[in-house]
Amino acid sequence: MLKDAAAIAGIAETPFAKKLDGSEKSLALDAILAALADAGIAPGEVDGLASYTLETTDEVEIAKNIGAGDVTFFSQVGYGGGAGPACVGQLAMAVATGQCRVGVAWRSRKRGSGGRPWAGGTPEASVPANWSRPWGLLRPVDEIAMLTRRYLHEVGGDRNHLANVALAVRKMANANPRALMHAKTLTRDEYLNARWISEPLCLYDNCLETDAALACVVVSAERARDCRHRPAYLHAFAQGLSRQSHTMVNYWSDDPLRGPASSCADQLFRASDIRARDIRVAQIYDAFTPLVLFSLEGYGFCGRGEGAAFSENGALELGGRLPINTSGGGLSEAYVHGFNLINEGVRQIRGDSVNQVADAESCLVTGGEGVPTSAMLLRR
Amino acid sequence: MSVTDGPLLPSIIDENRPFWEGARRGELRVQRCRETGRLIFPPRLRSPWAPKPGVEPEWVAVSGRGTLWSFVVPHPPLLPYYAQRAPYNVIVVALDEDPTIRMVGNLVAAEGSGIDSVDPATIEIGAAVRVVFERVDDEIHLPRWLLA
Image 1 (cartoon, each protein chain N blue to C red):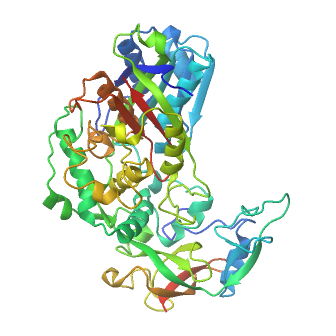
Image 2: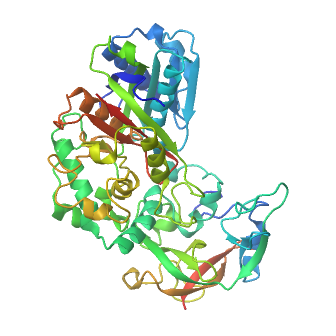
Image 3: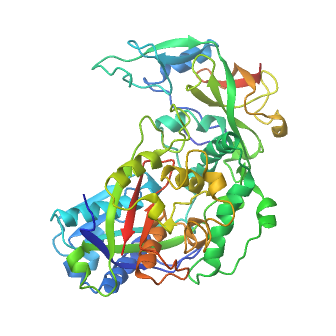
């Protein structure tokens, strides 16, 4: 088990914007070099690389541009937003087992100024697409809206529960100058009167469209203690692809509302001394508001069917039971397949978040629910 | 599947061909595990309930009756064919033979009606539905669903 053998020693990101100049490669290089500077580690020491399969910048290009040394570990993780914590966790395993010494994970994406994946080119002839697209279930939001309608029906929830998520993370963003929604407040009335995207999901249930790149640096616990910041130890890490589940359209399993988060959580907490009840702050993947409710259940912050009720009474806001996405998350800071959740988790551990949770001894960071996913527990 | 101004159509491959052959005959088909008898959908090349090398599940016809499990009402931005029909409905139907076997479809007001022919405000989870087929071209007959 990892149990704090490795740590995140450096983090960085480019500005977040609807449109940035420069290529995805150029942005990735800037984020990676800044993360190494944040750690105080020379780029020539980099010998481990991990990224998303969706990443357009490959290891060879990154390594030769940053002047990396001989790279002895490199891996990519699939399934979009499910991949973030897995990139970091796989680097941590590689560091802990001696496969590399300085690992860099990154994600660079011009989704703000680039196209919408569902609208361009020929859709993949994958199994789920063949059984959903022809009937007009076109976009990720349509796929998750289907699960959301069923979820609200089963648990007796309504749109106010989704609003609880949207409003909580917007308040976080309003305190965060980096956030795209820093200056834009959101009221419950505005939420309830927003235009539909795919009923029952409205505009504010959807993440932002952002240009950005982010990176973090993973080294051994011993090395991290010599770096510039307080280490964010990788206490535990897990991946989860639950039995017979389908990516995004989990309508065909016995229990469609038990997503990959549940299997990921089982493994995460098997490998952890920290329990869900000990966790005071979490960065929960929020491409869509309902994913947070599903994840609250999946990671055991409440029982099955209780995620909607858990969100009531400001539970997800500062001062509540579990403040989430303290930089504004994918809904209100930036949407970069969840990498900003990783960096914000590190800030909570360092103690320098703009929405610092006082007793943040640990922080859960999750990948996306509804796809093969991953999660990690950072600790001081 | 290919993108045109028309609807997105399924790619027919060996793995799913019997489904579309059935649809052309007005028959809703799913797979069945040869060993356990458990129904399977979407199709697999091996039964997950009793996987054996070289043994594919068999195809069987089901009644085409089910229950509306969930639904969405998409609004633009959408691909042109769908944007022209929005807001329309997309439903998931749980089959009577095994409610864990579910299919994505559309609720229509009558055989041959469009995917925007039902007022979304009238759609309810739990409604009984039955399948009909709409001929799109010689190869593809898409299942749609009527209130039963």
